[in-house]
Length: 202
Image (cartoon, rainbow, N blue to C red; front, side):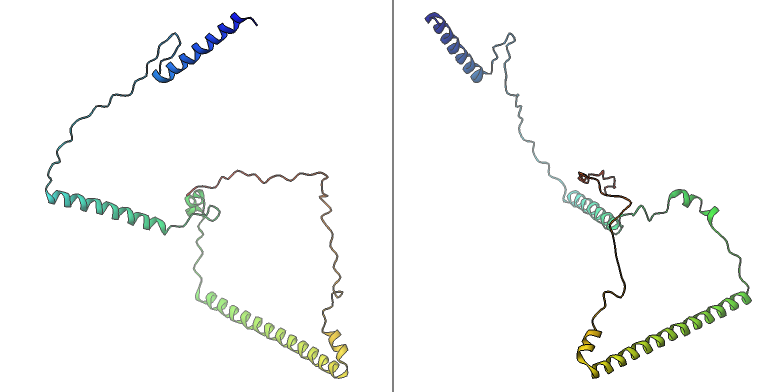
């Protein structure tokens, strides 16, 4: 590189640095369009004199504001008691519209039929009670005979008694295998569990 080229490049660098300083200090661009930046005009005016209001008007305003706040509080309390609706438990509007068509009007029963049904219910409840008592008696007899046998065994041998009261895991043979209809896939990468939440925001 010649000395003249070095001098020219140094002059360019110094010129660029001075232009940058001018742009930063004055906010004037070096492009073909000259852009001046100025702060917005701040217009000011003297403060207005406060009007003296009647105390009755001020009191009325305060009362209106107080009533408005109380009304909002009452509305919030009323809505707070309402629970979130469960869409699965709500009856569809189409069924509510068809309520008259769907409603069944049963015929009035005669006194003889009502009395006969009441007698049948009493007989059925008596029968089921007798069955329940018979089952309890059978269970009591089984438990009593089992306890009696264990007591006699304990008199004979303490070791046999301890063996007898141990639970028998081989009494009911149980074998289980994994699902055979859907065998596992090799190198299966489980999804992250992303889903789209479509629940309503209350």
